[in-house]
Length: 245
Image (cartoon, rainbow, N blue to C red; front, side, top):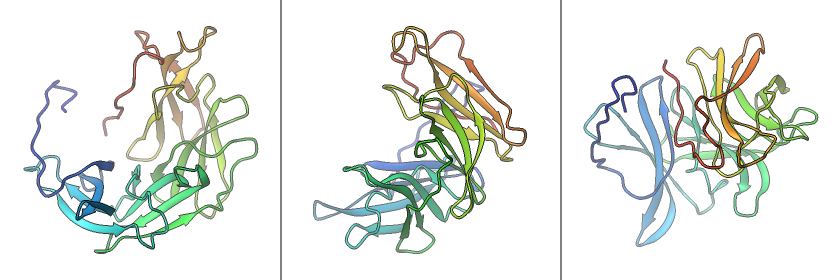
């Protein structure tokens, strides 16, 4: 999709099939990384991981695979972030997504033919905040949204081994009630953070609306501004969000 020209192109993908469980555009080498379920004899046995050039002929290249049997995290295909070099996939959430137990982050290495993963659950949270709702990766740093006791969203900078730092309280900014997850993005230099959040009305749900939160990661300055014209959060589902590099 060319948002400047308002044009779209499409091409049939070859070399991959099945339900896409995770997908992320990697701007550092300008490729889309995605995963699908792996099937053998009509049985779902794991995940396949691919790369595809969005400017190419639609040919997907299989780069790694993972089987459920003996797996540490059987939901690794549902990743939402990638490292700059494309070798590590990140999945934030519950290790057991069905039972909603053991919150943490999965790191899956797809640099080899067989993917390997580790689940990290000893994550230190800032005082007064719930577990992270999202994750954005920049180098060895993670940027995540977390709710306080009143549900207000805060942006937190953290790492696997370091202490978390609350960068900003986003003010009148809340998680989605019905349509989600919240869409967010970092700029390419890792200095600005953007998110589409919910701006609550005095008449909840019916008049809650979408808003744009912007955070300067260097100064911690944050603004949350309702989108104009009004987009009712309980009626207008957010289908995508991005920033131009």
